[in-house]
Picture 1 (tube, rainbow, N blue to C red):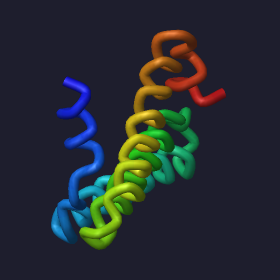
Picture 2: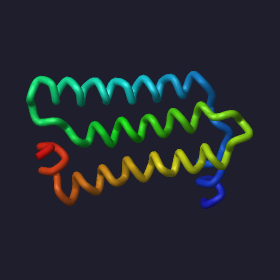
Picture 3: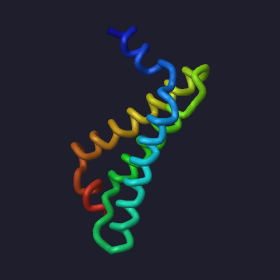
Length: 100
């Protein structure tokens, strides 16, 4: 099992198409956050974590094929950001959803 995880995390980056999808997702999360902030509703702070996780994954997938370690480190960072969002939602949901 650990070798499968290592192989998945430190595999070759997927390329520009996967990176473009992840960057588009990051841009969508940023736009949703900005919209809620401008309109004056409570800003979903979790959107920032989703944006950061998507951006880190996009950067990891846009690296050249010989940069497996850097891509793996960025993938691990993205997973940790998204897991921290889940933990924050479980521990203190009012700070994530309400934004205050």
